[in-house]
Amino acid sequence: MTFLEFRDVHKHYGSHEVLAGIDLSIERHQVVSLIGASGSGKSTLLRCANALEPITSGQIRLDGDVVSGPGVDLNGLRRRVGMVFQSYNLFPHMTVRDNITLAPRKVSGLSRAEAEARADELLARVGLTDRAGYYPDQLSGGQQQRAAIVRSLAMDPEVVLLDEITSALDPELVAEVLTIVRELARDGMTMMLATHEMGFAREVSDLVVFLDQGAILEQGPPEQVFDDPVQARTREFLRMVTEPAA
Image (cartoon, rainbow, N blue to C red; front, side, top):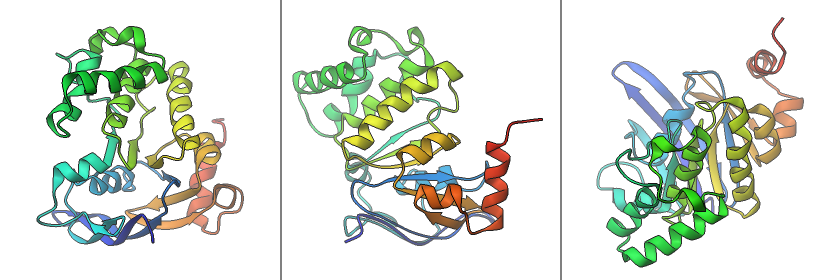
C-alpha cells in the first residue's frame, strides 16, 4: 500500500490555483525532494500534507487513512506528520529544551521527565546538548534549525516535511543542517522536502518531483530527472539553477 498519497489535489486562493491536480505516491522510508521555481507550489503542497492549509478538492491519505477535508483530527495528524519550517518557528520566550518538550507534553501526554529525557537524547544526536538551556536568539541560524528538526522528531512522527530549511542560512551553516537530514534518510525516515539544494536532492532522494505552476511536470529517480529530464521546462529550470552566473 502507498504510504502517503495525494489524489488529484487542488488548492485555490480565490481565483488563483496554486496546486493544479497533484497526483503523487510516496512509499514508507522514501525521501522525496520537491524542486521548482519559487511560486511553483512546493511549500503549499507540504503545508497541505500537514493540514496547515486546507485543500480545495482531492484527497490526501496517510497509510490508508484520509487526512484531508472536514473532520480530520488535526492533533492526531500532526503527531504523525512533523514539519520543519524555513524560518525555524521556535518560540522565542522558551529555552531550546522547553521548545522541544512542549508538544510531547501537551499533545502526547508525556510527563516532563519523559519529554525532557527524549529531548536530551535528540539534542545529543544533533550536537546541541550544551545549548538545551539557551534561548533561540542565543543560537546561530544553523543551531536554531537543528533545534527545530529535533522539535519535530520529539513527536516521533511517521513522516517529516522540510520546507526550504536551508534557505535562511548563511552558506557555511547549510552543511551542518543537511548532515542531520542525511542521517535521518539513512535511518529510514520518510521525508518530503522542498529544496533549492540540487546537489543535496540528487544525493539524498529516492524520488525527485519537479513542480511548475502548481502541477507535477516530471518525477523520477534523481539520476533520471537531473541527467536525462524528459520535459523541456525541466531542462530549462535545471540549466538556470546549475549553470554558474556569467
